[in-house]
Image (cartoon, rainbow, N blue to C red):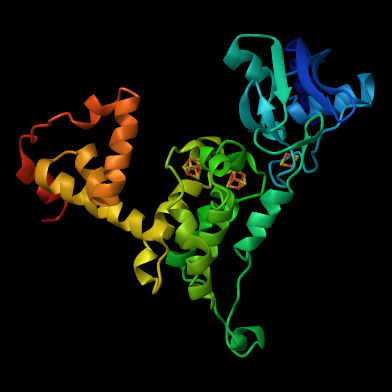
Length: 326
Ligand code: SF4
Ligand code: SF4
Ligand code: FES
């Protein structure tokens, strides 16, 4: 056992390499600047360990967040070589290998206001997470211990992935929709919201619909949240699944109604031509008046030619209809 530990230590030392870490610093007094540090790392060195050593051995003025060092607490979200990552789940030498460079840049997450160095203000993130009521509201009898209400394996299979969110905020930091639409709850809140919307033990389904449906139609389906989530939660999948509940809403907002119309238009375009005819889909989604306004805008920006392209039907339309179950 001792021999093995010694052997591993030697192996790690063998692979030691000097790296340069460029940290984007920020303070209210000085504004922002880049600062470089050099240190030796081995193949086991996580980026949180890199930061810890820089702070303890070279520069105690650096601020960053980290706690569990095992991708559980969600504190260490930041950008490493421009990519949103959990620092504790990122090995320094992996980054060196991927980018073929011994210089690694570290910046705070995008979108959130920076408080100091790598520490960002997550108040808005938490507000939105709590807006979706992120806990189970079980039946009174369950609370009083009169009945047992366990999840069936098939329900657990549906929810499992979406339960893995660690509130790191990486998906929100890379979401384009939250930046332009203050009414959008964001990917993480949707993942959390759907996790309870789809839980058969929950008792506030109607209330959850009111909170989630309008917002779900504000996502642009860019899949950034899918790409960056360190826990494979797939927030965009929860948004898609939430949209499917729109039909159960008694009173829909204009955004939700337009969203449903958009889906119907896409389905009918594919049914008729086998293709997504953008111009027609737009017209039937937004109506004539709105479309004319946008056509004028497209004309002014030299894009009208794309909207007016005459497309032909695809061959084998009957096969497409078969796929659509018709
Ligand atoms: S969904 Fe993923 S990226 Fe978003 S907060 Fe949760 S764990 Fe982080
Ligand atoms: S898919 Fe939707 S929620 Fe996810 S990053 Fe893109 S816009 Fe945001
Ligand atoms: S330190 Fe806890 S998730 Fe990285």
